[in-house]
Length: 119
Image (cartoon, rainbow, N blue to C red; front, side, top):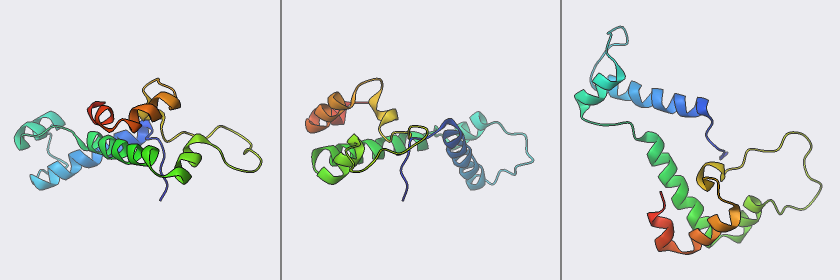
């Protein structure tokens, strides 16, 4: 399984999938002129699939940063051998860091109560 930072195109596809699912559940045909807002009002829901993905990712990252040393080494980039050529790889932690550095993210993860309240 490949983990990577969600690009804007990925986010758009996930939101489109979520709306498609709601429309299918309400038996709304794709030819009907119904806006996404109208569909969400009809089902009394809001878009939350991306939030669920982000929360699950945060929980898993917190667990890894507290326990699994092998995956920590991979996240920190401490791999043996020659560095790869070409463009720098997209980091898995980019969207969780929120402008902070890796060390502060790791400190927050070690304090479980602080990690849980972090949005």
